[in-house]
Image (cartoon, rainbow, N blue to C red; front, side, top):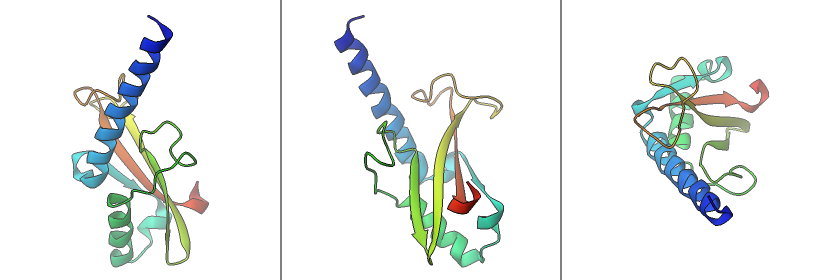
Length: 118
């Protein structure tokens, strides 16, 4: 495989992962949502607002998305910093996915946490 082919394959894989991550983030019921104790302690309306901020997140840049896969974000809400991160698992959620670009072998999990819980 030539260098150009390898680079194009990497770009294509990142594009596939990005598309799947964006679709999942906009509809997190397609996978799993995990919240940390700091997020769980929020009142229901604040948790819902935080989830809606993750669903609508689009502030991707080289600093928070170096691989252009849309798998991480930082959000400020009521003066508190939060992070969200998408991870890739196999179909049983037991191990990492063998190929995050393939939705037939991957389940997505988004974790939402207070930045100080990281």
